[in-house]
Image: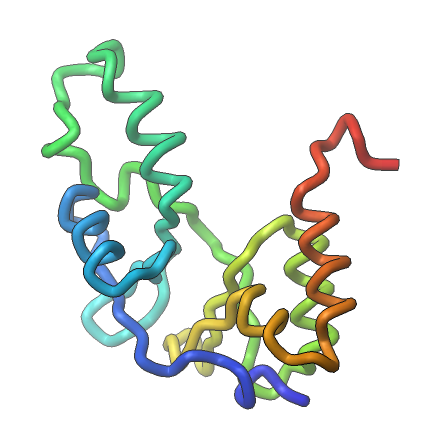
Length: 150
């Protein structure tokens, strides 16, 4: 089975000059935990996750020590993850699961010619009975901290 068989194709992108408040509102509206950051032509520039907002934005800007910016002024480009791991639609689900585990991520943008065509989440893989073990193995790898890994 290929990534294209399980990926979501109704993708919502955000621009890097959008605020994290706008991004959080979009995530809430769409009930998603990440947004690909794309330019006007749909080419992926990065990815913004709910964790990026909490860990990077809140921890670096909320106490005011990182300058004069308030949370409403923080741009997506200030906290997004650059160079996201991506897969092609023709990647096997097994290889995608290995990417989840190796890179400790839960979402993979699916691209063709650097343009986003879908998103694959660990949850998408986990709901297929044939891939439950692979999804479980990937989640175990993601969940272990570096000092607990063997």
